[in-house]
Image (cartoon, chains in turn yellow, cyan):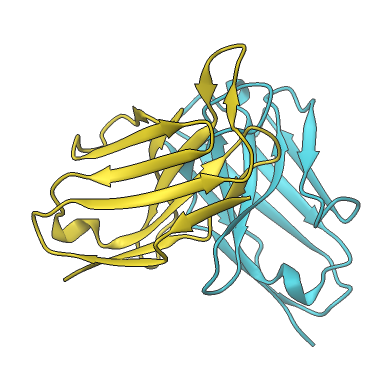
Length: 110
Length: 121
């Protein structure tokens, strides 16, 4: 089970936004030392967009203000300087076993 | 450009059947594993099914196992989801999505816009 916190977040433009994702079990695969975790951004009326995979690898074309960190059971998505276009719902997802998603975090402008 | 276009969504009664399709273009379809995912109205994301590039292996979420069947036609660059014995809780936007890994479902780098399935009497 993936549990995201907070459920919603309001951050001022230009400020840092941090979203957490906690797994009920480790999703670090020891044989390849990879964490099986991704982050997605979903804007209203659109499908999700892949931002980060393997916990910290940025997808091609994703701005470098987005970064992922963490290992084992605790992970973080950080937006270093919030832009207006970052307003969205963010989901973490694990694929260590059957793929599952966190419940989502709604990010708004303060 | 990669494009995934779903079709086939509709209003169907509980116990009914529906077949969803996903037309793929802009990439070499027969070299990528594919998935179906869904999102109930106002809710989060749920992975539904996975099919490898060669159609084996195939995996399903427990919630749809025995009722849904995923398939693909590499000659036609198409992905399908046959849904039988539909339940009210299957109501959702259904997305097809390309997998960046091979051999198992992992991350989804391209998604279609989705097709809406509503199960209601």
